[in-house]
Image 1 (tube, protein in one colour):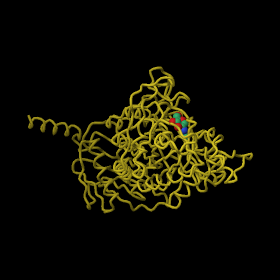
Image 2 (tube, protein in one colour; image 1 turned 90 degrees about the vertical axis):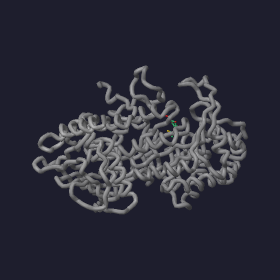
Image 3 (cartoon, rainbow, N blue to C red; image 1 turned 120 degrees about the horizontal axis):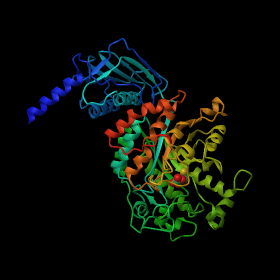
Image 4 (cartoon, helix red, strand yellow; image 1 turned 135 degrees about the horizontal axis):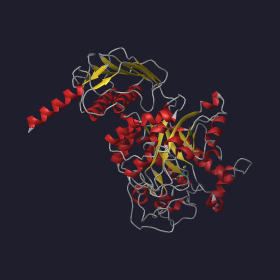
Length: 547
Ligand code: TNX
């Protein structure tokens, strides 16, 4: 039996390679995101990847070594051939290098001849994006048979348009176990995305272990039930919970770093904090009682800005957050913080008087009080060498110096930020909210109802740089991000469906500087959906209304 299967495998491989020795599978460099420059030499001999091919990584840099290991795994998955990783040799090899001289650290070149494929990055991250292109070139081949692959002779030169290429994922409304978070990270890596904005706390659950305040996770991660579907008057009354231990977080941060992804944690404040108030009712304006929220929406109960204890709690939390997450940026939320309680709260009003905050034509005194809270946290983080990102509401009372604005209520926040000298990240809900539905079909899985239909074509049509910005102002738009809120996404299979293939359209908006051509994009899509199939991703089939 064993002999028979070895024999038939041998025969199958001979059939695949053909009598000329050239494999029947020919890679295509028409991948997503499309590289900037691809020059295929149809006369010269290309490279045959087969079981004699090695990966050569001369650098002993840990992240280059990790790259080599990952590349071997990617190739094994698609071809069934696992190339060995070696420290030298240049014949019949895929050579991984990080010696490219380029201003953009994410730049890479690939050159393919009959001897070798050379992937050269301007950094280990650049080399990683070159690896992704090679991997996707196989998935985009004319045939998907496992075995050897022919790579046409070519040179490719590539670099991304935006330095910040993000995706946000909400693990507060629903909890997703660490293995699912790692699948997400692999999905992002496949799309050359380099920032994972981890929304880890909200009214419906605090999901991060904080050693100095164990009640946050012990009490704040558990709710006694969840509203059913979109019906606010209902509740399933099924206890729900989950949080990430610090060990799990460290492991996930490393997993992401190995894939050149920085995790930006978000501690959403001073609103979206009911889970904290459930643990510490004395920190709310009314004193409670509060419960971890059992429904979605915007709560009027927020941190009491007149209470000194919130500032020490936030310092303690941020102290642990900065130890866990090496990211230069920490997201401090700032969205949807109703001022109803503060207007009536004697402590908040006393704080407003003490700080001399006055309503003027731009902001109310309460909006300025929010700025006071945000600035406190921003200053604390600055002392720890970090910068902050906030949702566009933080412009209302005046954004803390040096803060980055994440524009979600359209592009206005980013425009205002850029004009006033703040960096901004584009994540307008009309184009980039992946919790919005993908069709009006009643059979469509549950999605947020307040937004429009978003299909890859809608995402693809989004231009992140508003046309009225000057070149100087445009430099403040540092990146583009999609957000997946999970009120209506209870399982990771469902999350996958919301993410792909919309991430493919996002990837090209983030990466490519070339004029957009959606029809051409559609012809490249099957290449990446084959990778989705191989990874068993649950992807949606809505490419456009017509399809
Ligand atoms: C608005 S976007 C929110 C989130 C919700 C989302 C649902 C933002 C900063 N706040 O709290 O989950 O809408 O689509």
